[in-house]
Image (cartoon, rainbow, N blue to C red; front, side):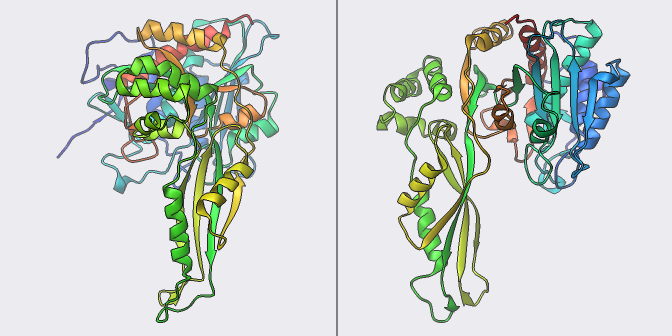
Length: 470
């Protein structure tokens, strides 16, 4: 029987089973204990709750001497499971805008029968932490809380106030969205010059051995959901007819599957491909240079499209995610529908996407409805004032690794804060494997070394930003 090593105080100070001996940052054992506690509380919509994560964290912070008056807990009246924590660490100059550390504590559902290991037991094995949420995004949440505890213990006096908002509902599925709730009910409490969030992470090469970059998420795509619907009078299945609703829908989906939206650049993805071209080199690097110079370059596009990530970063995408059709096993279908989820380049309108879908499908019998799931806002600019501290600390911890702007194909709570006037960027110092570490899937994991390096990186980065004068 395979044996797994369950993280405990005893193993908290143990070295990873692989790799060279490394120096530990102060308080690593306490951090591991905090991380373990957060991970092992099921905060999925299906079987758990965010509120116990918040309650346990608040109790831990109070026990460590963090001032209770600076810990603000909220539970939305309509959702007792969607607990929220806003913690404040006062700065010396109230005229300077605060720095906000943002995170969501809810996780995607995970069922024990599907996983190799218990998804809600933190297991350290072969140099990795395994459990639901270790990569998305309880490691970063634990680092945010650990930052405040370390700053408080050190009696650190930043110029700017540092805030932390840990919320629920980012993953969807039914929880009240905590970021939106804070904007609507506690906007002044979370006010900040900018926020640091998930979304940016370190990338390895395809072998998982060489660190390629540290991404700095500068923009996110906009999520829009459309419904394709085919209807028909139907009839008895013993007398088939050519105008079958399911066949009509299938033809429409086949057309959509073969269509690529055109390449479109904004500062975030243009900066990524421009800066990564010399890092990647070879055929891929040349293709990156070529596509930036000419977005219509078919040969470069073909090379980059081999990577699903590059393909998504270059354009709007629309994909079928749900299907429904028919009403009886012995009847011709009267209705067939498909859910189409689009991740849309910032600056692209709902009308433009709808017009493209209509043109591609080119079938008046297919009704297309839906559109925007939330109101987008223009991406905030990524300035040298933001990038320079990140690059300086990255170079210190990972010499030779560049910081590159990044367009996130998915979306996060940054959408809500950006729309509310709080520029929000994704940066973590956490390196992910080429397969994305099982995020939202089975056997989610993250390298132990990545977590510990990320802890060091974010501790220094938040300090650097908090001490900026303007």
